[in-house]
Image (cartoon, rainbow, N blue to C red):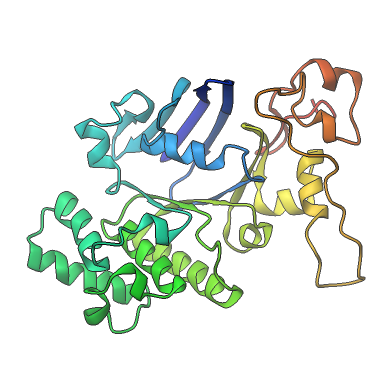
Length: 326
């Protein structure tokens, strides 16, 4: 079967008064049906901008300057990158076929409307149900995501819910139209570890029930280890490594991915010192020549400083952008 989503050589640039920021610079990956794909990298690497590009939500002064985003909708291909961001076709897909859980529910949920109204809005728009039917569907979704007393909560405002409940309400809103693709942008940020585990378990259960493919955007490698099937590692707007989740954790190739692994504390075996990645992320307006990671890399060579490495397959479905393996 073809993948449900294909991203090829995507470039999203922001044109500011101070220069051009290459937020996404030649990203390519795909999402298979029923798969959970982890999108990993530190803040500012382009994860969220990639997700926004898929949904046609890149705002001025940013724009897609190259590449393609192909959505396989049933038997036809839809070129999302070529659609009018305000047009009817992308609005019929956004929230219906492809939905997103945003990073901070308190700023994503409208404070002047009830939680139920905001869930019903998407159901009425995409599912063509009347208000009574949409309200029943909203209550049902709130119950599915584990919110107690859904008949009462449906009429409450976001500020009346706890952080965990607001995140569950966001999940209910995203899944209300049973999308084929769910993009989750840091869905467990600012939640305590117990609620994090509950939210992740909930997402996996709903994925199995609705047959939804998930793109999980996070910098938490523990989350990735627990739920992802495949992992894409990004750095400064580029994909530096892509492989299955076990391959990423046990056969890491790229020095940046190795640095991420070494900076994770271990609760098993001998106590060891954490090894942070040296240096800082380069200025977005003055990117280094050659490999974008070379100023922080301990294995840098002369070629790394002059030429950017291509993404090369170093094993079955294992791709790395590094001159050590090209």
